[in-house]
Image (cartoon, rainbow, N blue to C red; front, side):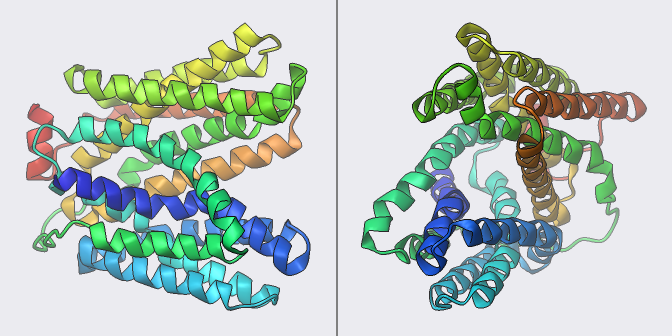
Length: 381
């Protein structure tokens, strides 16, 4: 039951980010007559999250993740309410968006840090994989919720984002802060290859997702075909995550090798997408990329769970989510400056670099010690 509570909280934490692009565009169009301000708002929102993720995650680790999350969720909701009161003045609107991004920067890492305390020992890896399936549903649901709220007024979607944050407060698990301990505090630089893995994943998946319309146009289709392209990718991702939820805990061998394999397979899929001038080739590439998405994210998440010290988990997970967001931003930018085949090839190249970095780190250092009782239980399972 505690996992259900955690999952509900996690989805409400994530939903505003999925709603933001369309919600900001609708708000900007109503206030200024153009969607362009909405693009600026989204860019500064993501930028503020990236800047704040590490410091906010560190703060959560120090004050207690559950307690700190509740405060940040309420503050984020208040800033969004302030955004609706900013009127048509672009500068106050941007200020409130930046403040919301700062407050929300560590939310994803914080809620992930609470997961081990919300599941039974031995179930953590399966829980992470199941969560990867649910995330895909939230990605699809965000724009749908905005569409459902928009008839109530152009402010309604932004207020809906605030309401989601407040609902998350209700479901954040009641978890006691672990006692602060003295001793070894491994540098976060030790997870640099995993930050690169998450970054490489973000670049590759965004070059495929954002290229859905030009890929469809290359095959003679339009918006409807682009939706079909996304549906294939999301379906493959959900299937891969669901399969890994069953199979992952049974696999032997360290997770470094698994991550490198998943990144390599995704890179091959990106090449197929880049040269997918026919439906069979394109679908093969989309499925190859999508089916590894959930397993890769689960592998990265579990490795960090087993290696980050208890006092730095919120910070570490926040940095990983930030790296993924930065990769997504770079991949999206590459779509705008590269030809239709060039963007997926660029994403594949970055994913391959990440795979080689993981393999190099694996050869250069043994698998690190486990740093928490929960992780030790998981490692034996």
